[in-house]
Length: 76
Image 1 (cartoon, one colour):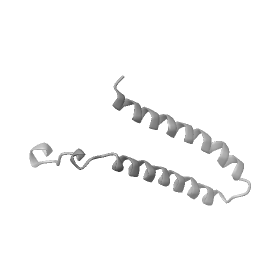
Image 2 (tube, one colour; image 1 turned 135 degrees about the vertical axis):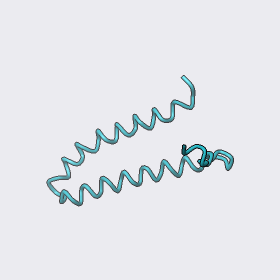
Image 3 (cartoon, one colour; image 1 turned 90 degrees about the horizontal axis):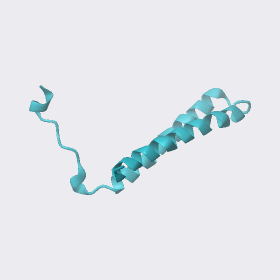
């Protein structure tokens, strides 16, 4: 397996782990916290997680690693 394939696999496993852990934790807090507030905290945590991943991805790239622009010939 190519080394470049390992990072996305690890991210998918980490996402599955966090998804599996969030349900039992949410059930524990449901009796004490309003459901709307609990849902907002879960979405806020997801947003922070994505932000951290995007920051880590951008710091690891060099300036020449950008994607190519889409030209008019590509749209046809």
